[in-house]
Amino acid sequence: MGSLVSYAHFLRSIEVFKYNAILSVSNLPKYWSKRIVGDVLQQRNMQRLITLSLIPRTLEQYSEKYAEKWVKRVDENFFWYDLSSRLTRPLLNVPPHQLRRSLEYLLEKYYSGDVSGMIAESLFIYLLEKLGANIYLVGHLRPFKRKAAFCPDFVIWDDGPAITRLVSTGNYQLPIYAEVKGSTRELDEERLEKALLQLKYVIKTSQDRGLIFIAHKNPVYEGIVFEVAL
Image (cartoon, rainbow, N blue to C red; front, side):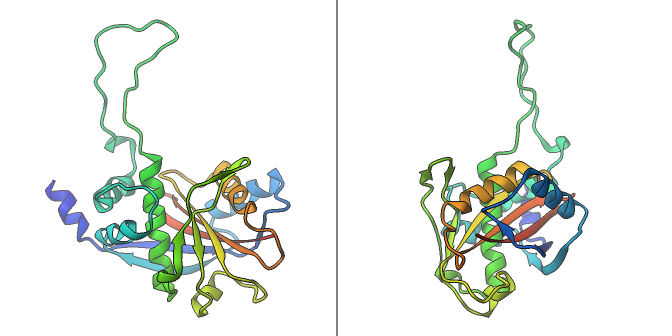
């Protein structure tokens, strides 16, 4: 337990990048999403946006006010998710009895997608604040499901200078919508396409803008921001 407490006070740096091309919710062929994922993993077509220096315990504060799920001690969870290796996963008890062929025992625990998403949502709010945005003008949307996808996570009503670092075109209208994804693995096409599908529900005109923020491991945590338009 002592190691967790010491880590909660440890300064951690996370690089955040912005993808240079604007993604379209109207036309995203399979080959394009595959190319984008390849760019991200190879650090191509991206610019460094900011280096986030954080003490993990600060994520707890952002989680309290902005994350959808109610899970306590995000700082301790961040410690394990940041390590994110098979060696850190607890092994489950396996009875000394053989199962029938159609069944098999679960051998190890898996990281919770809810907690991974909560860490990413907290990191996104932290990013907005460090860029200078007014996070009191950011709210979490209720997770209503419409057609084939849920609504995006956040709505942003701030139109200050900080937002221009994320939204490159000036001819847009508020609010800006944001979808946040978190993973202890590398970015994959399915996660990116799902985020675009969620933004497609709210981006209906040429003036609507969206953001995708993905926190993934490459091989350590890093953040990627995508700008999304019609």
